[in-house]
Image (cartoon, rainbow, N blue to C red):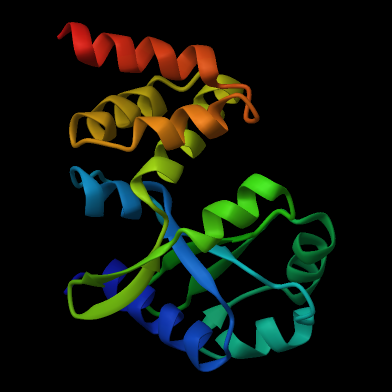
Length: 184
């Protein structure tokens, strides 16, 4: 098992012992659904409503570096904070789940899957596609759009994608990639 997977397994075990709901997303989820891609970190969406920053920081101490102040800011603003494994120098991005109807729905749709050596909660394929479309629209990232093409090639629930694409302002972008897939 790679250092990244060992750290991910450890972090997930800590979150589960603490009763903190989470889901894998980003390139780790892409690797599960489609193809492995090199990444600098692992992304986990965490549900931290009602959880205080000190207990989150303590959860990872002493094996990780985590700033309690960063956790406090992330919880208050529903943004992201980093956790760094000190020995293995592997970074995790913990993204505080946003409290919008779509992000609640996305979290409810997460799935329990078998990863190499452990089980974990992961974002659904469709919600990963929608998130990557939203990120690509905001950032102009060709890498995110390539990921969308790869994920769509493996099949997806188009009705679900279309149902939520409008609310995320990515319907036109989704149509482009769905049409391109059918034309290929």
